[in-house]
Image (cartoon, rainbow, N blue to C red; front, side):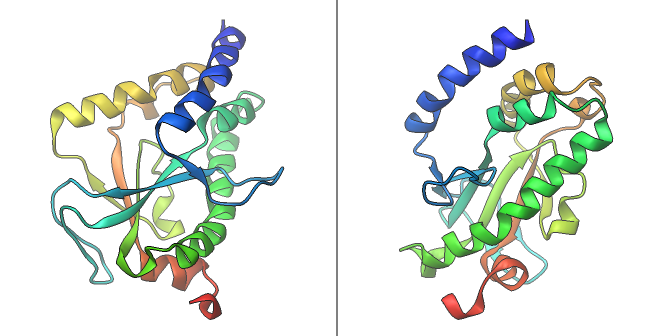
Length: 186
């Protein structure tokens, strides 16, 4: 059953990629990072990050998406939840320097305030520099949780972490560049 679902998901993923206006952080490469991104205007409540960055409605952010089908294919090979968590952490950590370069080279660099993601996989995200915030709107929280169900059914053997609500992950542009960027590229 899992293999059938993975095959269908693999076929549908390029369609989703095209329709969602996502793009890869790196140019064409066999070893692309786990991130796919798009520019977005923020529509949530006002957020104040620890470095003083104030994010309000309609601010430009880079929305990060994990390349879920690729990640799920790698997770299904592991039998330990600890190994799965470590793999996700390492994949995200490895991708952040390229995300910083992508941001620094973006034509809207001056207007972009930071990066945003939504996930239930937020354990350890603070060590990477992210700040987490709860999703207040109950309908949107439920919607995001339901969109995560397929990944959980395939890759996670225990549903403990599925019970955690999805959260926003934020990192300011300045913090991303300070932690992961090349200062000379600005």
